[in-house]
Amino acid sequence: PRLANQIAAGEVVERPASVVKELVENAIDAGSTRIELELEGGGARLIRVRDNGCGITEEDLPLALSRHATSKIESLDDLEGVASLGFRGEALASISSVSRLELFSNVSDEPANGWRVVAEGREMSPRVSPAPHPRGTSVAVRDLFFNTPARRKFMRTEKTEFGHVEESFRRLALSRHDIGWTLRHNQKVVHQLRAGEDTLTVERRIGALLGRNFLEHALHLDIEASGLRLSGWVGLPTHSRAQADQQYFFVNGRVVRDRLVAHAVRQAYRDVLFHGRHPVFVLYLELDPTVVDVNVHPTKHEVRFRDGRLVHDFLFSSLHKALAEVRP
Ligand code: ADP
Ligand code: MG
Image (tube, rainbow, N blue to C red; front, side, top):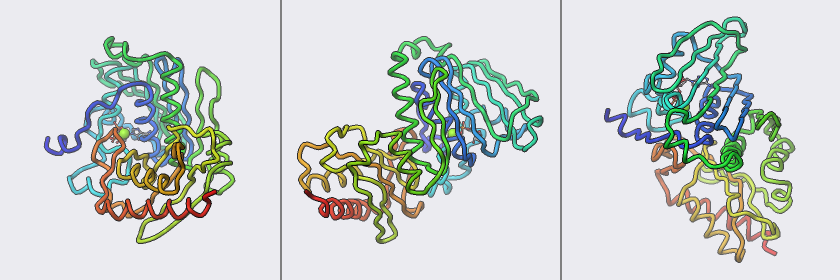
């Protein structure tokens, strides 16, 4: 229970976009190289995430849907240096308690060896039966909040909900260039992104997700010092259509919205006198995972650096130097 408290999961299922995030993080953790998302009705009717990862064994299938049974953390020590995205062991259980969830999985390369498990609402007792499926996992979440009218009422229009889904997708796809992605909504392909970490493929992805305009007015940087590495793109003041929300920061491949980080970036921008411009950026910070605690809050994307000052100063000076060089 103490561990459970420290993990402090809270509510993970707020709207379709949060379901997307949890399902995709599981797919990433499973080592997938291809992840396909399919939504209907902004995600209220259907959210399907299909991956080609390691799959779930028949024995583990019912466990995967029960709370805390399969948490990837086994001891408090594991809380340090958490490498995987999921570490609470309750996303699938929570989602299946407020939707009709159907999961297919196969750990082998023989499609006939697949399994299916369904769970509907709180009354669920997962039923497992054989079903063909290629190696990997597909999770379909239908009729989100069908049994919780109060929460269903909080869902906005299809367009608004899909907007949130797309934003989650953007963050996830920007976090892993080595994964190929597809996003479909109401049978239409919204994004199709090839896997690849070469400059051309990465820039094509960023252009597709953030608009071509972004890269045309951005400075690429890649700086390493004292065990820290900062790479990515920062928007230049010539980017006239900069949007306040185009701020993407990843720490060891994980999306982060952190005050210390935001402060360092803002400070660097202000110093170089980009008056009246929103800082826009896609930045990747890499550092030793044991000096950063990702467990501050499971959904708020905060982190705690062991040496916050070092990180802050590194970010500030790296950005300051890079921006000053191109100051008009
Ligand atoms: P957590 O990710 O915190 O462990 P979840 O409820 O999200 O908890 O998932 C429960 C478990 O189900 C995971 O720990 C994992 O073992 C398994 N699982 C879920 N989704 C997948 C997937 N797409 N591929 C492989 N295993 C999965
Ligand atoms: Mg998870």
